[in-house]
Image (tube, rainbow over all chains, first blue to last red; front, side):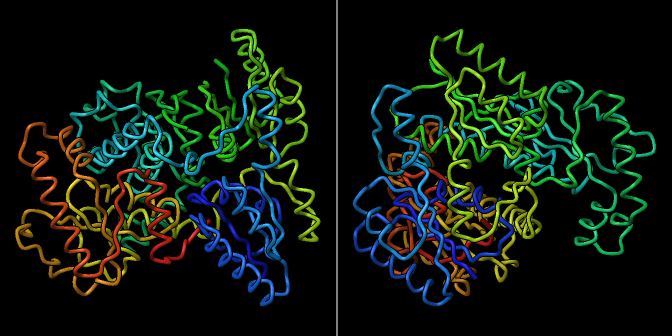
Length: 269
Length: 269
């Protein structure tokens, strides 16, 4: 199997994102290796040894996605046996010309602490404190409040919105207490109607997820899942709450779709 | 001010990562706009209008970072007044040649649901259930257990490890109950010594963070912060627990540095 290396003198997150996007275009199984913080000649030489060993072992040239600030260290890596791809290299010159300013590469700028860093950590703390309907007094501060029945992805989606975009995302569960027979929007949410966003799933998927938690329970039964989802979707429609069926979506896609539908601003990039 | 657009027929996360890395090389303030899920001719035309309006308003050509699977929709965008950058375009041909297989672009592959998706959601659930020392019975399952005094970044770092890398990261607070005068490794952690990783901060930074929570308290005082940090760092050294001073690092950098030091495998890419 071919080995893919993601190498950088920083976190290598950009190299990983770059490589992941490239590889998604090819139907191919590979082995992944990240070498982060390769910030000295010596570490670069160790990295080259690892690349060359992978080549000898598999007989296939390793693929190297790299983003270096240091030109000297980059030179060591590109002399390895790997097939090297560096997107920064190619695009810096044209972008510099368009902007009319020279590039000033510094290590750790892309994923370092930026101006709005504290803001993002605050969003994470807010989201944790407001997970699962736990802290309703703070809803004035929420950017968005995700609602849905148990296990429809409210928590991971809230956390991703906070971590990636600095958005204060509370979430509130619709439960048995709300009486699914004649489901009403919980009173407590009414003043925040404009911040609500509903999540839903296909019954089969919810049944699978709940079964992992409590197999054979009424809670996990296909019948109960179908019943709760029908009730909650009817409520979303009646109350004109925007909602998303997240069955086929990853947490990244759910977050991006929510931002798209609500026109919420990303607080960080 | 120049406007930067991140545009894609998917989540635009790759376009954002690409653009962010590029822009980090230039000392420049810009306005960011993400246009995600631009998956029809009509949406592309609306996007072009927004780009051209931004140009008219500022008199500076907008910068466009885009990643499209659809060639037709891409063509609409590149006919806008913006200066367009597409890293996929440039690198697909050489990578295809190296791999010896043609590219098979499909929408939403990069950030869609992959094989190991459930695994990642499990890691998030595990990390939440094991936040702040709340569920010690599960530590056999942990990939790593972050420890440190209150407000040293354990929770955001654990969550990032789970969300980004699928790592089950518990965290456990070292508190007053542990008696800072003669601080010992809490008994409960001893069987998991090999999984422990310490976080610390500079006293000034911890004082600032705690002051936001409880201004003027003993808990937030410079003296108490210094005292706790000295005690916990001495314990890390005595017990040979690897640790990191995270004062100058973002959550991305902390997570990448922890993986680097511990050689923990990333569970997803």
